Length: 169
Image (cartoon, rainbow, N blue to C red; front, side, top):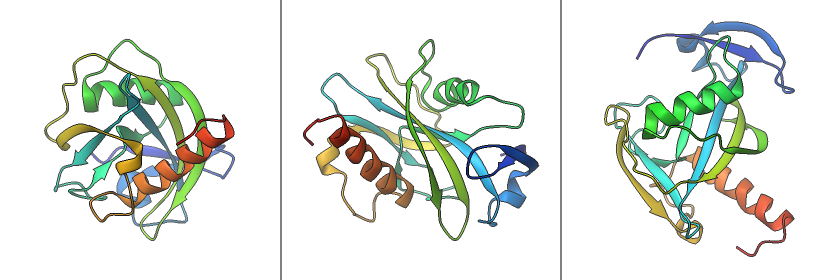
């Protein structure tokens, strides 16, 4: 993995600087932007990726369909499109933005921009970064150790989002 520059932002997402990824990870005082895409099938099941055991964050855990850093000089939309293609081989769609939030842990602090889409095409996942992909019912994603803390936070927020829309979970 290359040590690319990523932008440092404040809680509002305003860019206040940039730093190497290696300096940002490990320093939770530096907020950086990431994108998540929740990829659903027509039955409402959520595609999850099982992260490679070589990843520095949540190795071997089930995680969000798509997730990645917004590179320096890149828009959120550009990052979404790039990450969908890099991780799952999905091209030609722009998911809908649904919310943003801050996710913080002792390792890092992220300003997450979450999007969603329904996808029925072929998934060609990046075997360098991902061990496996499969669809899950939201009700089967619980506090188990097999899931990343980031995913559990995301699913909790997504359930709240659905409730606000009047959907039963």
